[in-house]
Length: 467
Image (cartoon, rainbow, N blue to C red):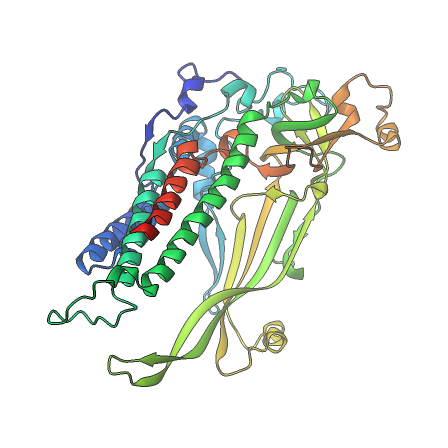
């Protein structure tokens, strides 16, 4: 299949600026709420509230490349996108205990371009598809995307950090000297060199340092993806390799995944998976508060949080096929993996009449009066049959016994003799991800946003010690 004639590699080059708007009514709602926080923070002179608003703007707007991919997916795969939207959503299973099933109607790591259909495959799982072409979404066909130099992330993250700095300045200004803000009281001449402001400055510098450190790790990961050439499976060699392709069956279909031993919660065709069983807990706790007159009192407050009770994971070997050929993949030998959004989630309200749920109360010690269970949920993440798959791994020669069982010992095709495992190499960290290189880089930022802006913020925070 050829790419649309109007689509070129330049489509995925970010340029200088790439500002995006929210997608969907929930994102617009979050965007509007973030704007309100920014305005409220300015009115009440609490810059930290405005900082939260700027972070909300980042969360509610997609990365520029992600926006392009979403628009292309709707344009190039309208039927597949519509099916997922129709099948996704929340379904009520039982009114009495609010039992629900939720399947996402959107997957950020789903195919953008239509992959080769099963009617185009060869009968030989290692051979090229009938057309002999690479899958349309392969990096050797669409190129490696580059993010814009500046996007919503860079601008709003910088403004959020400046707001935090202003809050630090205000906190330091009103602490450490005993100044109460009374207009009749003179401000000490050494007001800006107190221990109070220095302690807040250390926190400010620490935030910048953590931001920069996290950005460096993300930048290195993005650079590894962009700089490593993607091999065609038909001509791949032994050693470190970056591959992109489609998950197809090898010797047998993946076994049925039974979540938490409950046969009413099953998922088929998962070649790499994990599930978690969690409970939502409401906990009461006491805090000591001090009023403006110095009087102390005890207040009872509540908090809610999800706690993991049980989890499990598994894998099943598969064929990765890029249109030119297939290779065996051992997903269980990859220590680093990312399978994206969850596939399905079951949930229900807590029912003390259920024997298994009552047992969990005693196991976790939730029978105390200050804690109680509100809800239960079971969540499944996984790499499915026919999903796109991106990996950086090491190609090794398969065992002669295994190849002999398939009758491929004397085969001249190199990809038949190889298997992909998750072994690292110098400057090469092996990993396996759901999606292609295109979708895996959908949220990648530029070097300016990863390194320069956080570095400038760190230097600016350090320079405040000289004020």
